[in-house]
Image 1 (cartoon, rainbow, N blue to C red):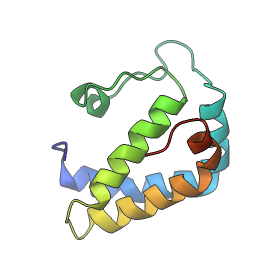
Image 2: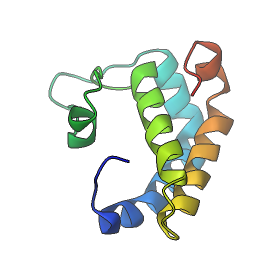
Image 3: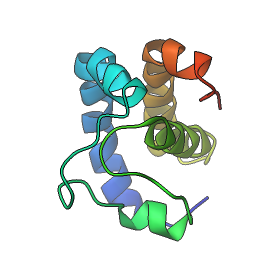
Image 4: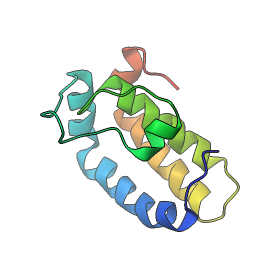
Length: 107
């Protein structure tokens, strides 16, 4: 597991869940279309840099896969607060990601 602050993950996962519940269909479509933002509006974050993962700006299959992998990993972390929230977020992404998975983004 990538070392991260447990408090910040616990605080953010409910927001991630809500974002995918309410906007999952749109996020999925933007990823499939590789909808990139203007340069500088969406930069690679610390997690991606530490994981040595190459991500493009904006939405894309690479980012979808990156977050699915992290959420799946965190769902098995053994932390009583983080694991169930990460699993719920992962399941929501799986539900909305059927077209992404058909394009080779299975994880």
